[in-house]
Figure 1 (cartoon, rainbow, N blue to C red):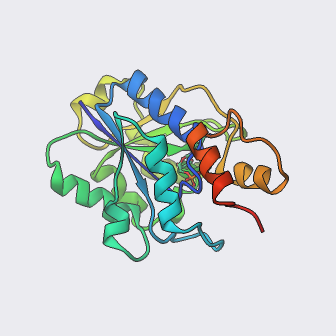
Figure 2 (figure 1 turned 120 degrees about the horizontal axis):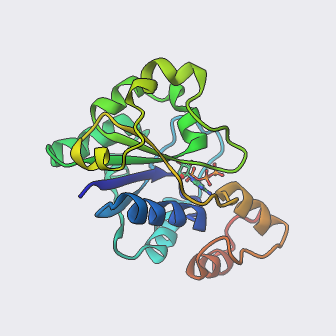
Figure 3 (figure 1 turned 180 degrees about the vertical axis):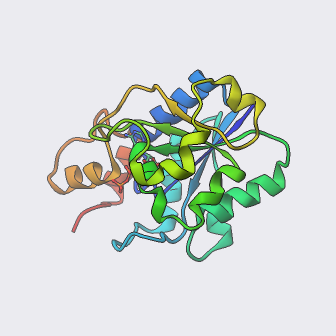
Amino acid sequence: MPIGLFGGSFDPVHLGHLNLAKSAIDLIGLEQVRFIPLNLPAHREASLTRLEDRLKMLHSALRPPFFLDETEINRGGVSYTVETLQSFRDEYPTRSLCLLLGKDSFDQLGSWRSYDKLLSIVNIVVAGRPNSHNGIPAHLKPTFESALSKSVTSLHSKRCGVLYFLEAPLMDVSSTKIRCNVLKGESLMGLVPEEVAYFIEQKNLYQL
Ligand code: ATP
């Protein structure tokens, strides 16, 4: 069975992340999903919450078959997905590996280091997000269009090279929205797991 690899800042982890991972388990038949918090972002200017707190929230939110994976933290420095994927490929030479991406991240892929090499290492599974357009954006078509498949079984039979759009229910939640809600004193109910809401409150995270 394929392994799902799911990277992000997880600042904080929320139910949109968990729903995507669950849909991937249910609809694709992944064996597990590794949540891989990034160490230092390549793009983002805004600073992240302390690593220790991001890890504690993730740890409290994840139960098997979801696992916390510290590959990028242990490598240190700026986190480049291509390096992370190559290290998983070295560890699992023959397994199908599926990189999970929200559609907003997929649409930005052209700015990622060696984005045109990703499909030579893994399969890519894209989940929709509210307000994102369907399909492959024009600038990514030359790299990705020929890899597009509508067959889940190709994610099992091929260890890399397949692009698949997951028909998962969309959840209108983002870490940005959660940080805004905290600032405005609004509830986090239905947006993050209870343990995460409790941790944010106890630690006064995301306050000015
Ligand atoms: P921020 O609002 O700070 O940009 P985010 O909510 O997009 O954060 P990240 O940790 O940056 O979360 O994202 C990790 C991955 O999860 C990305 O591929 C992103 O597209 C995806 N993702 C985040 N929220 C959702 C959601 N609600 N549905 C589907 N995918 C999501």
